Length: 87
View 1 (spheres, one colour):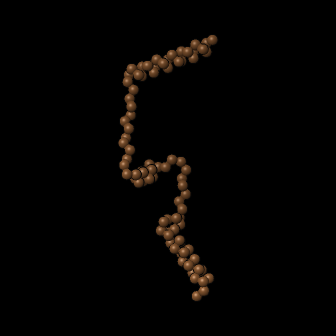
View 2 (cartoon, helix red, strand yellow; view 1 turned 90 degrees about the vertical axis):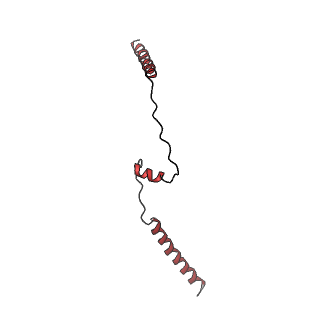
View 3 (cartoon, one colour; view 1 turned 45 degrees about the vertical axis):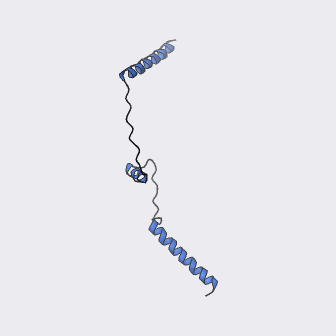
């Protein structure tokens, strides 16, 4: 056997092995990526790799006094806008 035939047979074996690996990896049938935000199931599957889940944050509530202060400030702003519009 000559060196050229050995090299060509090795190259043929390499291409066969690469094709077999691509089939096993699933790279032979590429999946087109969808645009936009991924679905929850896909996000959960991707997040399953992480070891620990993040704790769920509690919703913060606004006290009645705080709500009243915000309402008073909004009324004062709108009063200033209306006063400026009259001039």
